[in-house]
Image (cartoon, rainbow, N blue to C red; front, side, top):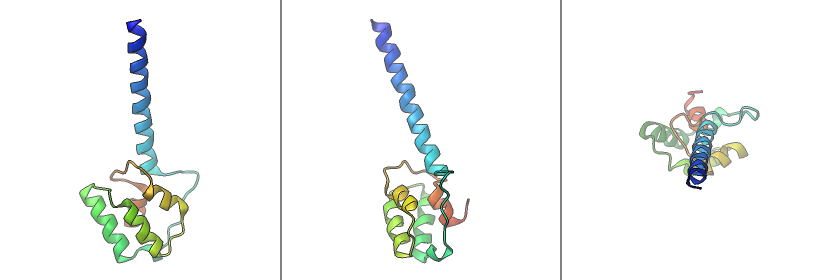
Length: 104
C-alpha cells in the first residue's frame, strides 16, 4: 500500500513540475499560432519605462500596470491584456516585455 501512495505522490510531483514548465514556456513564447501585431505607436515613455524596470529588476509585479499603459497608448490586443493581467508566472524573456523592448 505504501508503494502505491509513494508512486502517486511522485506522479503528482512530476505533473506539477510539467505544468510549471509549460507556464514558463507560454510566458516566454506566447502562442505561436496567434502572433501579436505590435504597433510602434504603443511605445510611450510610460510603457517603455515600466517594461525596462521589470526587465532589469526581474520583478514583474507591474504587469497589470503595463497592460493599462498599453491600453492607454491605444493597444487593443486581448492576447497582450490577458497575458499581462494573468496570474503568470512572468520571467525575464516574457514575450510582452520583449516585444515592448524590441528583444524579440
